[in-house]
Image 1 (cartoon, rainbow, N blue to C red):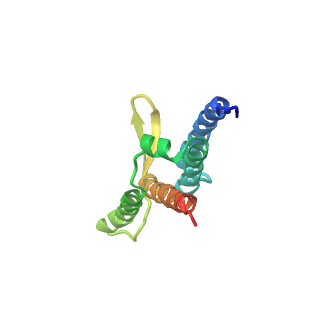
Image 2: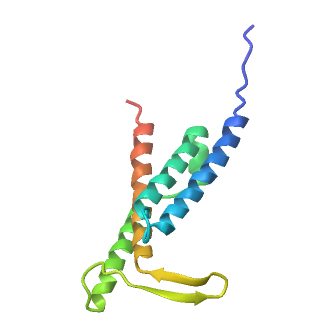
Image 3: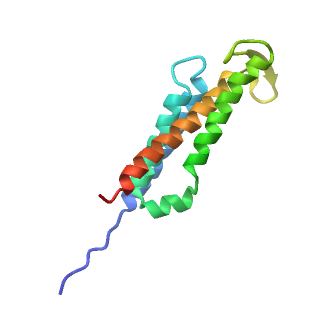
Length: 145
């Protein structure tokens, strides 16, 4: 009689959740620091994609697709539209494509805060990078050949 071994991945799943949270927090920091310091939408998007990939590796594909039911092709389209709209919006005011504007505002809880047009552009890049990276990796992972 063969003894059936029950898989206990509690430690792997717990550690994955903690590490994923740390990576996602760092990717948010990189995203918001990007228009003044190194970082931005590209590297923040790669960090987010790596955190989500870690979740796909730790848990099974079906569980994560159920928890994150995103259509990554639609996310690419939305990201491109946001990035292009940011560039075109400066042209509406007679400035060259992708001209950056910024201003400091006094916000109630945050205090003096810089608002810039680079942030929506970075958001578009962020969405495109996350979606493309995950589509490529998941397509390779699902290939049976």
